[in-house]
Image (cartoon, rainbow, N blue to C red; front, side, top):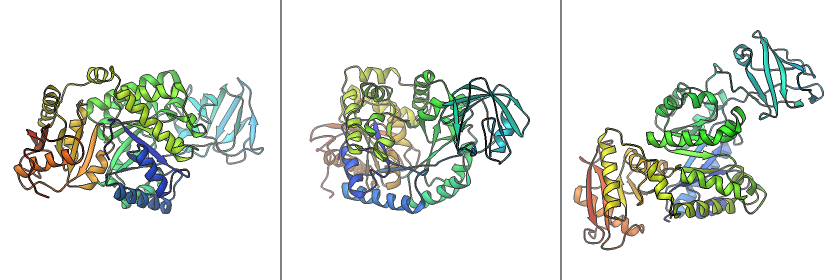
Length: 478
């Protein structure tokens, strides 16, 4: 099944979409990668979902990527004697280390790292920002605050700290157990929550040992401030706009989204735009006009993937939501202004052989109006560099390794095919032309450009370009 669009769709699995039949319908509607949210999924269910996705993959004959999204630290206040308390603007309210039930003057905060780290003047946002407190005094055991906004607080509400750099890692004990479990099932991507600094990626990478690629979720101001370093150590980024919109001014989020998208594109790392893209379709069969514009902006920016969360996981219209996102993206990519916008945002290539070959392949393909760029890739690096160029023609990534093809299914404009290694250069050209014909990327007489590394089967050695005619060079090696 060939997609007509270049941006990929990432659909979250949940109660509304966990059956094998529904997963197949979501794929047919346009989903390229499935997300499993480990905040709401135990290990047994996770393994079942992975098995169902792989069954769909086998049925449709296309590589399908799986992203496991780790929960990350959950910072919450304790309980109240009455379950909920009314507060008034300007009053004093304290968060402390006393485990007794809270009242209108104080509440237990079971996180000593917060008590030690918050300084005078820092903001504390409770319940996704519905309550804003400002620290006026902190001694390591209690944080005395003034109520700046909001009028109530209740049991177990989440705490966000936009001004505080917490000395805690991104992985909790639950995350470590979850990470071991998802790696054992062979998922392709792992999304890491609560990233504040590049060091937060180190432990996950050490545990993964290359068995899955690591996606850093950018959801905190501290991560935005050190974005370049985080990009360097991550395999991909997710713009987690929900948490960003809590910890940073809402009006700043669109600009930050553009900054992250463009920085990821410059680095040649995939970037996913997430959260509330078609939120109204949780309960309605059609989105709002504003949501359509939101999806369109991400596509115009050249994001690799756009993500559905509750819309596909728990909504009343999961298939319709994926189909709508597919239609919006496809329409944007045929807009007469689309190619110009994508081209204007293209970065200069890095001084590497792979980048030079990828740049040349794009320019030759567009100048000669070739049908496709066909990239042989074992590790996925050649596919990544080809997608970084954002060519107008399709990219067909051929890999003998199914895990590589699944990982590249997240990548902009990339059609992944699992194919045995070529025997020699002639076989490589024949195989590329035959696959272009079989997969609908060319007809007899069309030309394609092939990139590969010579000698063959040498990862990271992309150094060859070859223009070939579909049909005339295809041998009957079936």
